[in-house]
Image 1: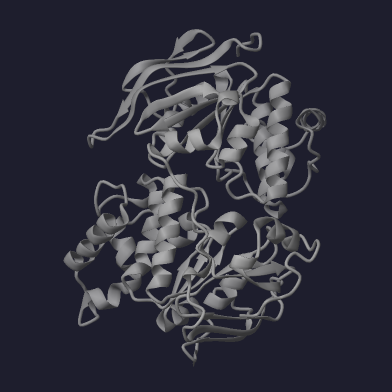
Image 2: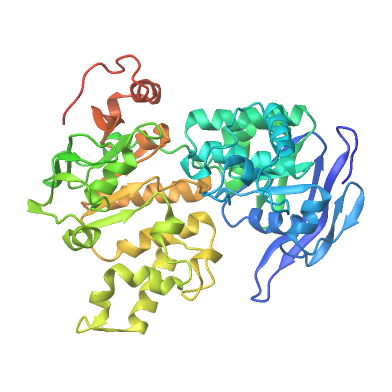
Length: 509
């Protein structure tokens, strides 16, 4: 373990490169300097090299050439345990806690011994909680906690390990605005107390707010490396994308309001809190679901798709009733892009060609019985080309792809199966600005082809950029039905919180 004064160099990368046996070069001569007590932002498009850099720094993978220096001395960690012992901890987006154990047991999970809890551990837990500035019951089971609190437990775990540098990889990607504030305040508080952070986020407002210095990776190179005070969002976006990225245009009336009703939902209710939800979506229309975390947005989509077997009410597509199961929904013409693409949207151990062909396997099979691998591979190759999926080919695994490219694969699963109704749950969560723009353009394209789309999104500005109408969800109900062209982001935020009247009236279209 090392100690030193604030402002001294704690971590330094010198001309680091990383190449893989398949010929891919992920890092190309990266220089990086992280100073003690600072919050160092690391940003870049999916595939820019951020994940590889983290793996090299944290001892998961060795560098190909160049060197890594810790507290002034060159290091060559052969495992994450080596890096951890030196004082470096990594907190990933999907927090690897043990859900059946308590908060205290998770914080000290790394300690060996017969006791899961001792008086001394409780004293230390209380001390860490005070340092963090966020109260957590040491005996609460992690499975019962929201994801924001789990992030705080992961930070406590890093502090308990004695980490001097904490790498946080997309820590707020799945959090509500309130939970984001809690995490950002904790980082700020701990940095002031001497802990150093490398903070990775696709939310550029967070980067500009919380960091002292920013490094932008593009194509494996550090193309921008400056104090945050010299930057604005426009410069960051330009550096990330390698070009000027215009703000997503408010589409407003781009979706059709005069097409036939394709999706009709009447009186949906569930044990998970959805209450008497009715909605309709016309061909070519993009209907947005706006609500806070826990409002019931995802639960409504699950109920419509038949994933929640407790759902009551009626769902029809083009006037025909839909059975209450995902299989029946797919047969009726639904495409579903779930919030958790890793667990629900993809088969990580199967190659891209199997993932992409799965919903359309009957059409691609001989007499709808014998799968034809050649046809499936051809479809995957077409998707890779048309959607710009950055992958080595149809045999690549989803786990090898960046977040934006993996999400394109989830879209590709349904794209060629001619599904008239699309349910999209946070389709741009955890993807970079370039991939986000491409996905939103794809959503618009689907609407232009006459699909009926329901889009749940926690980024209200993004939602308004593509939606025809917006349904404000609160407490498992639809509280407002609004024309997207007649409402602002600020009004949506107020309505989602149950504050004010916003545009005043519920507008049924």
